[in-house]
Image (cartoon, rainbow, N blue to C red; front, side, top):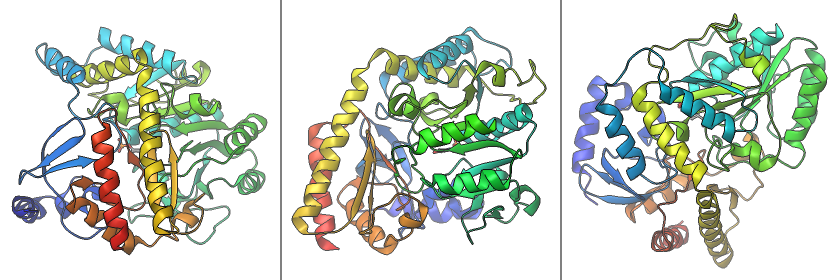
Length: 428
Ligand SMILES: *Cc1c(COP(=O)(O)O)cnc(C)c1O
């Protein structure tokens, strides 16, 4: 595989961009090698600057659930462009997309558009604090909620009541209000709630985790959190930036039947444009300015081009329930195929999957939280990743990511992925 141009661009990029990339996960640091510079994408394929074509299972880290460059989204953007790129004033399209989101997502009665998932979660925590008058919140180890200061808190030393900053630049003052629990551990949550009675504004989590690899909530976990929140006057926030509009039209909350108070959204909601949103129960969302006292704003929020892309995407998803059956079947075929290869080769690795999300973990343990995920052999994953890449299959360049399937994958693509997978696994 010739990657000369990508290599050259990366050298050049490193001179003017920190690490050569505008978001760290793109850098291939976890798997060895240099990132590919992508020139275009179509359906299940991306094409790099050297003209190599890959079937890829990243789909822009989630948004491209209909495959790349979907004609309905593309046409909507081109049409919107002709009318101007930004007005800084309300538009009819914002009303339309808000109503659509309210109709699709069970917990959402009112919704505010922002520009990224990070903004959505930051704002959701602020509103939960404003609404409850409390300051602390609980997050789960290995769950990612964007790069807001208060979310960049790692597991660390098993601190029961206090988080440690995960990144230089996050102050201890900020970190002390973030409480940590292992995913799927209701007992730990109960302990935290008892130790911080009447101080906890919110519990935030990925209802199906995708940022420590794909990790499913165990039966009763989400229901248990719902109950704790109801009993203690805590706002339950589902971060559905990844799962929203993917696992079902109404996200994980629809699929799993547990309704949070606030939902954060991103990725698919913008059809590939930078969009996020947070929404929830009316009485909570009415705390948001200018209706209420909790300030939150955005010069380009609800941008007409971004809304056109998002609206085209959400319309397609709400009007075509067959999308979800197809994603489900694609997931079953692919994951089933990988599973039977593992069995045939006698390999002990673990697969977690739900619908169009899955991760192959290079560990023989069950993965139900971040600690389990960290038992993975990441060097082995790096070898697997690079072997797949050489065979034209582009996976997320980290063990700790979920892969995303799209409706653009046909049987021929799945066959290619499975063949490459068998070759790659045999070589490890
Ligand atoms: C991607 C992601 C975010 C952050 O969204 P950005 O648009 O990258 O800021 C937040 N939460 C979850 C669950 C995500 O997967």
